[in-house]
Image 1 (tube, rainbow, N blue to C red):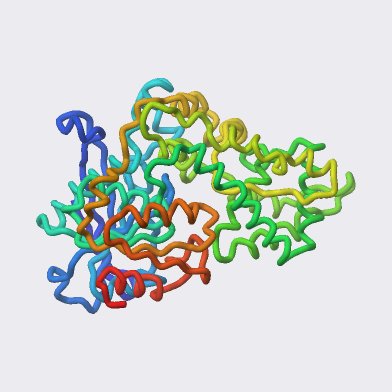
Image 2 (image 1 turned 180 degrees about the vertical axis):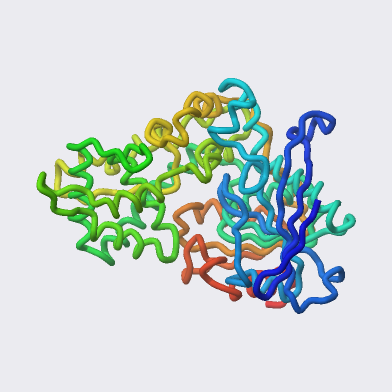
Amino acid sequence: MTTTYRQPGVVLTDHRFTVPLDHADPAGETIELYAREVVASEKADRDDLPWLVYLQGGPGFGANRFIGRPAWLGRALEEYRVLLLDQRGTGASTPANRQTLPLRGGPAEQAAYLAHFRADSIVRDCELVRRRVTGGAPWTVLGQSFGGFCTVTYLSLAPEGLAAALITGGLPSLDAHADDVYRAAYPRIERKVAAHYARYPQDVERARRIADHLLTHEVTLPGGHLLTVEAFQSLGILLGGGEGSHRLHHLLEDAFVRTPHGPELSDAFQEEVRGLLSFAAHPLYALVHEAAYGQGDRPTDWAAERVRAEFPQFDAAKALAGDGPLLFTGESIHPWMFDGDPALRPLRETAELLAARTGWPPLYDPARLAANEVPVAAAVCHDDMYVDTAHALTTARRIRGLRAWVADEFEHDGVRAGGPRVLDRLLALARDEV
């Protein structure tokens, strides 16, 4: 089923596809995928254009909705028909959240269902969609962040479907356990926090004051979200984006308001924090985030929470007991999030079962990647807060023919913040033009 309409400068066509929940059982249960095709309005001969499919970051976010031709999309539309895919469970595809998952049954059934929402299933979805929209011709994939992880899985499972692969901020380790991922992450996050405080030294005391208030007061945000000190620290996820340090600073500078009962966290602060912390719009990010690293018989077992204990400088109470700065955290999922967030509370037991799950199938094929023949280009942020640069460059060396561009002028969101320049560079690298 398709629907075509126009927005400024583009022609849009909405597609819906039915795919197997489990690609190993193609005659079994199905789910629905939504994708939006975007073509420049001046491209009258759209049927002659090659396809580029965009795989969004996450896991758990739908493809971005655009008005017009912003950022990288305008550059892509110069020569491609672009397909923005809502990966399974996200956006307008069959949803997976606290409201819909009980249709599966109890926590055990929900966890078994969500085990099919990783990169391997997403790649097999892409292959079914590709054959339906391109007539079998290979297409180019642009993978951002987790979309880049999916792209490396694509190169492992179905390279015949790819004309080229472009990756931004998303070269995963091929064999690191989730523990290894977070053991590398916490020192990197600490560097980002130090850089933030160097830029805004006044935020050291502001963050300490907010943390002290949260350690001595119970704060429930609008909608029922518990604002604990650990939840406040997790706002450090902002520091992985190009404007994130400035956003965090603006949030901290107006946190308190005077009341008849003394200083309290302002309504404006609480409302903004609620929007930043809530998983209501993307619960899969919390549910399958660590599962995205699962391979083999070793469970992920709340890796970010366990590994954090190895870095006591992130303990807020200890920081406030001394004179050190409060450290924010970053892109990590913790058990307490399923206690504090109303969108996640009904799914706590499901999350526990996913954390304990073993027998994860492999996501990458090192031998196939070593023999790769697909043109591949990857943009790597020199100190990406979300994806370890050392892991990324090790993987770059293990994919035959991959050309890496290591840059220090953008952060993890470079493909969006950098406009057409990032995609220009990746296309030139993939085409061996530079």
